[in-house]
Image (spheres, rainbow over the protein chains, first blue to last red):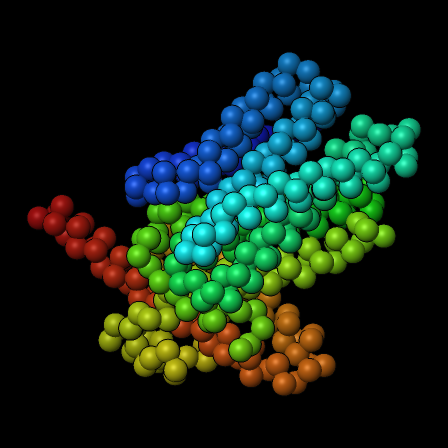
Length: 232
Length: 137
């Protein structure tokens, strides 16, 4: 059963997602970062649809369970496309967009196939296990792709502050969720012990993106060497 | 086994991304000079003069000023980064003393960030007082 704090976090998440779109429209960056804004709109819509399913079928119903995890998997795929758009922006001078797109689609198909292959070995819990396995793998592939993009930013000495912050916050989001899902896969009873952590983490991405659109002008520049976690 | 590998890799990259994100927030403040008032209050003349030990003192001063809604998120993120650095210094830093100067530099940057935030809050408080005086008269 969801408590009042869950609903508060839910509402905060929606407001933050909405604020990303509003801030980017206000700052004239909506079309420039179209895929990111479409993802936020889709996430907002999925949130409303989840509430509808929750009210009609209940928190413990299979309908809500499947709707939650499959919409989550679809949203993660949507976030992949947002990430690919960031790749395109970083690599725009190298004209490598087609290659990036092809590579990412192959990677996505490979992830789904790999997850299905693992779960097929334990066919008795196929559907329930598949969604958690798929989510964990999708977030992990997202993390690898973001890490590669971060490496490219460092290598190409990309200086656009807004772009850098969008990528870094995406990295925090993907790695956080990949860790949570992996932990749940390792110890399923931890699901209840993790409490509000996933919801809280889900609020951080729209918060960081809204901040990047609102506070950082497109012209802001930063030396990426200053940001390396390992001293250079 | 795969889940365990994913968990470990995710935690390591999470820390790396979080560290870099906080540093990107701090980097923006590094270019800003401090006003004379803030220099007097904090005892920090410029970015080079900031030290890691100053951080808590400046944070206490920061809490005395009225909050600016715009910088709340930034300050929380940098505070979490500073705590992470302190944990790092007390654990891994003891095993590898060569990392101590790096944690000290990062702590000093956090202290300068806090001083810049204090500077902004002092200006904000001054604006509030000025607007109230205008309303009264």
